[in-house]
Length: 121
Image 1 (cartoon, rainbow, N blue to C red):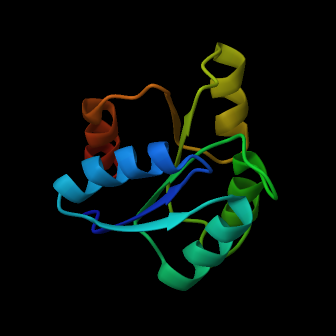
Image 2: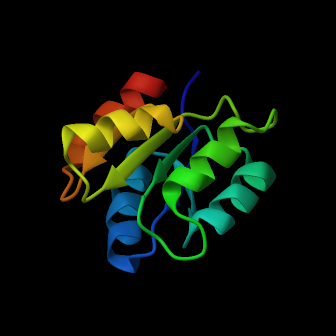
Image 3: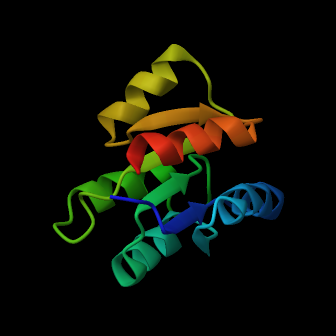
């Protein structure tokens, strides 16, 4: 499976646009959401190939959104990569327990994002 459509979820417009530039430069179509609730709606509607998900957001955090997505038959196979300022070992363990495939710590590099696209593409 190659990755063509990417959902970027972050309440920071700066982080969203930084991620979007990396993903767009890689030749992917980008869809964005500002919080977990929007992420669930967009994922169901757009069926992205991968989701880059912030954790700390209003309305619904990334953990809750990921649990919702992984428990839904329409979205359970979409890999979710957390992109967050959380970087402790416990955060990585918890992220995987919520259904995330990996956690990339902020500030991220373009190479870290590209590596995720290669791993799950």
